[in-house]
Image (cartoon, rainbow, N blue to C red; front, side, top):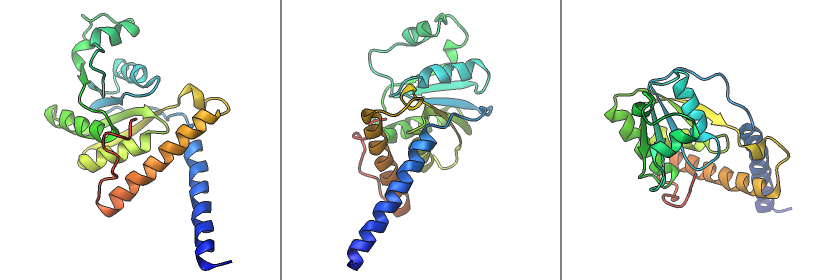
Length: 197
Protein backbone atom coordinates (compact mmCIF):
# COMPACT_ATOMS: atom_id res chain seq x y z
CA UNK A 1 0.00 0.00 0.00
CA UNK A 2 1.63 3.23 -1.11
CA UNK A 3 1.85 6.35 1.06
CA UNK A 4 -0.39 8.25 -1.36
CA UNK A 5 -3.04 5.55 -1.25
CA UNK A 6 -3.00 5.50 2.55
CA UNK A 7 -3.33 9.29 2.62
CA UNK A 8 -6.31 9.15 0.22
CA UNK A 9 -7.90 6.41 2.33
CA UNK A 10 -7.47 8.47 5.50
CA UNK A 11 -8.93 11.58 3.85
CA UNK A 12 -11.85 9.54 2.55
CA UNK A 13 -12.49 8.20 6.04
CA UNK A 14 -12.41 11.71 7.51
CA UNK A 15 -14.80 12.98 4.83
CA UNK A 16 -17.21 10.08 5.46
CA UNK A 17 -17.14 10.58 9.24
CA UNK A 18 -17.77 14.29 8.73
CA UNK A 19 -20.66 13.57 6.38
CA UNK A 20 -22.34 11.24 8.89
CA UNK A 21 -21.99 13.92 11.58
CA UNK A 22 -23.37 16.55 9.16
CA UNK A 23 -26.52 14.52 8.40
CA UNK A 24 -27.14 13.93 12.11
CA UNK A 25 -26.53 17.60 12.91
CA UNK A 26 -28.88 18.75 10.13
CA UNK A 27 -31.60 16.51 11.55
CA UNK A 28 -31.33 17.88 15.10
CA UNK A 29 -34.25 20.09 16.21
CA UNK A 30 -33.42 23.61 17.44
CA UNK A 31 -32.95 24.40 21.08
CA UNK A 32 -35.16 27.00 22.75
CA UNK A 33 -35.01 30.29 20.86
CA UNK A 34 -33.03 33.21 22.27
CA UNK A 35 -34.41 36.76 22.32
CA UNK A 36 -32.40 38.91 19.89
CA UNK A 37 -32.55 42.38 18.31
CA UNK A 38 -33.67 40.95 15.00
CA UNK A 39 -34.45 37.78 13.08
CA UNK A 40 -33.28 36.85 9.58
CA UNK A 41 -34.88 34.07 7.54
CA UNK A 42 -33.01 32.80 4.48
CA UNK A 43 -35.41 31.63 1.78
CA UNK A 44 -34.92 28.51 -0.27
CA UNK A 45 -36.42 25.79 1.91
CA UNK A 46 -39.67 24.78 3.53
CA UNK A 47 -40.78 26.13 6.91
CA UNK A 48 -38.07 28.81 7.13
CA UNK A 49 -40.32 31.86 6.67
CA UNK A 50 -43.19 30.38 8.71
CA UNK A 51 -40.82 29.66 11.58
CA UNK A 52 -39.29 33.14 11.46
CA UNK A 53 -42.69 34.87 11.53
CA UNK A 54 -43.77 32.68 14.45
CA UNK A 55 -40.60 33.74 16.30
CA UNK A 56 -41.27 37.41 15.48
CA UNK A 57 -44.83 37.08 16.74
CA UNK A 58 -43.49 35.43 19.90
CA UNK A 59 -41.24 38.38 20.70
CA UNK A 60 -37.88 36.75 19.92
CA UNK A 61 -36.88 39.73 17.78
CA UNK A 62 -38.15 43.23 17.08
CA UNK A 63 -37.53 43.19 13.30
CA UNK A 64 -37.48 40.45 10.67
CA UNK A 65 -35.58 40.28 7.39
CA UNK A 66 -36.68 37.66 4.87
CA UNK A 67 -33.63 37.45 2.61
CA UNK A 68 -33.68 36.18 -0.96
CA UNK A 69 -37.36 36.79 -1.72
CA UNK A 70 -38.45 36.23 -5.32
CA UNK A 71 -39.50 39.23 -7.43
CA UNK A 72 -43.18 38.23 -7.57
CA UNK A 73 -43.64 37.42 -3.87
CA UNK A 74 -45.37 40.15 -1.87
CA UNK A 75 -45.61 40.77 1.85
CA UNK A 76 -49.38 40.47 1.52
CA UNK A 77 -48.97 36.97 0.09
CA UNK A 78 -46.61 35.92 2.91
CA UNK A 79 -48.88 37.31 5.62
CA UNK A 80 -51.95 35.73 4.01
CA UNK A 81 -50.32 32.31 4.40
CA UNK A 82 -49.84 33.19 8.06
CA UNK A 83 -53.48 34.32 8.37
CA UNK A 84 -52.18 37.77 9.29
CA UNK A 85 -53.69 40.91 7.66
CA UNK A 86 -51.46 43.39 5.86
CA UNK A 87 -52.74 46.03 8.30
CA UNK A 88 -51.28 44.06 11.21
CA UNK A 89 -48.57 45.83 13.28
CA UNK A 90 -46.42 42.80 12.47
CA UNK A 91 -46.26 43.84 8.81
CA UNK A 92 -44.37 47.05 9.59
CA UNK A 93 -41.63 45.01 11.27
CA UNK A 94 -40.90 42.78 8.26
CA UNK A 95 -38.46 43.63 5.47
CA UNK A 96 -38.34 41.66 2.22
CA UNK A 97 -34.81 41.38 0.85
CA UNK A 98 -34.87 40.75 -2.89
CA UNK A 99 -31.24 41.06 -3.98
CA UNK A 100 -29.74 37.86 -2.61
CA UNK A 101 -29.52 34.86 -4.93
CA UNK A 102 -26.97 32.87 -2.94
CA UNK A 103 -25.85 32.32 0.63
CA UNK A 104 -23.07 34.87 0.16
CA UNK A 105 -25.72 37.28 -1.15
CA UNK A 106 -27.85 36.53 1.94
CA UNK A 107 -24.86 37.42 4.11
CA UNK A 108 -24.36 40.80 2.43
CA UNK A 109 -28.08 41.57 2.51
CA UNK A 110 -28.24 40.66 6.20
CA UNK A 111 -25.17 42.73 7.09
CA UNK A 112 -26.55 45.82 5.36
CA UNK A 113 -30.00 45.44 6.95
CA UNK A 114 -28.52 44.96 10.42
CA UNK A 115 -26.29 48.02 10.01
CA UNK A 116 -29.14 50.21 8.75
CA UNK A 117 -31.33 49.18 11.68
CA UNK A 118 -28.54 49.26 14.28
CA UNK A 119 -29.00 45.62 15.18
CA UNK A 120 -26.27 43.72 17.01
CA UNK A 121 -27.73 40.30 17.77
CA UNK A 122 -29.58 38.22 15.18
CA UNK A 123 -31.51 34.96 15.27
CA UNK A 124 -30.66 33.19 12.00
CA UNK A 125 -33.40 30.90 10.67
CA UNK A 126 -32.72 28.44 7.88
CA UNK A 127 -32.67 24.68 7.27
CA UNK A 128 -30.51 22.48 9.48
CA UNK A 129 -28.36 21.46 6.49
CA UNK A 130 -27.78 25.14 5.64
CA UNK A 131 -27.46 26.78 9.07
CA UNK A 132 -23.73 26.31 9.68
CA UNK A 133 -22.72 27.66 6.27
CA UNK A 134 -25.21 30.54 6.56
CA UNK A 135 -23.88 31.60 9.98
CA UNK A 136 -20.30 31.22 8.74
CA UNK A 137 -20.90 33.44 5.69
CA UNK A 138 -22.82 36.10 7.66
CA UNK A 139 -20.08 36.17 10.30
CA UNK A 140 -17.42 36.48 7.59
CA UNK A 141 -19.28 39.46 6.10
CA UNK A 142 -20.25 41.10 9.40
CA UNK A 143 -17.89 39.82 12.15
CA UNK A 144 -19.29 42.25 14.74
CA UNK A 145 -22.76 40.69 14.65
CA UNK A 146 -23.68 38.22 17.38
CA UNK A 147 -25.41 35.36 15.56
CA UNK A 148 -27.68 32.76 17.16
CA UNK A 149 -28.52 29.75 14.97
CA UNK A 150 -32.11 28.52 14.84
CA UNK A 151 -32.18 25.55 12.43
CA UNK A 152 -35.38 24.25 10.89
CA UNK A 153 -35.57 20.50 10.29
CA UNK A 154 -37.20 19.87 6.88
CA UNK A 155 -39.85 17.15 6.65
CA UNK A 156 -37.51 15.08 4.44
CA UNK A 157 -35.07 14.78 7.36
CA UNK A 158 -37.75 13.79 9.85
CA UNK A 159 -38.05 10.36 8.24
CA UNK A 160 -35.69 7.87 6.60
CA UNK A 161 -33.67 9.92 4.06
CA UNK A 162 -34.39 9.17 0.41
CA UNK A 163 -31.72 9.05 -2.28
CA UNK A 164 -32.67 12.60 -3.28
CA UNK A 165 -32.31 13.81 0.31
CA UNK A 166 -28.91 12.12 0.68
CA UNK A 167 -27.74 13.79 -2.54
CA UNK A 168 -28.88 17.16 -1.11
CA UNK A 169 -26.91 16.42 2.07
CA UNK A 170 -23.85 15.43 0.00
CA UNK A 171 -24.01 18.69 -1.95
CA UNK A 172 -24.59 20.87 1.12
CA UNK A 173 -21.79 19.17 3.08
CA UNK A 174 -19.30 19.87 0.30
CA UNK A 175 -20.48 23.49 0.13
CA UNK A 176 -19.87 23.82 3.87
CA UNK A 177 -16.36 22.40 3.45
CA UNK A 178 -15.75 24.87 0.61
CA UNK A 179 -16.91 27.79 2.76
CA UNK A 180 -14.72 26.67 5.67
CA UNK A 181 -11.70 26.40 3.38
CA UNK A 182 -12.51 29.91 2.14
CA UNK A 183 -12.49 31.21 5.72
CA UNK A 184 -9.20 29.46 6.56
CA UNK A 185 -7.44 30.69 3.43
CA UNK A 186 -9.05 34.13 3.34
CA UNK A 187 -10.34 33.42 -0.16
CA UNK A 188 -13.97 33.25 -1.37
CA UNK A 189 -15.25 29.72 -1.87
CA UNK A 190 -16.01 30.38 -5.53
CA UNK A 191 -19.73 29.64 -5.24
CA UNK A 192 -21.16 33.18 -5.50
CA UNK A 193 -24.38 32.96 -7.51
CA UNK A 194 -24.07 29.17 -7.79
CA UNK A 195 -24.48 27.85 -4.29
CA UNK A 196 -28.20 28.33 -3.82
CA UNK A 197 -29.58 27.84 -0.33
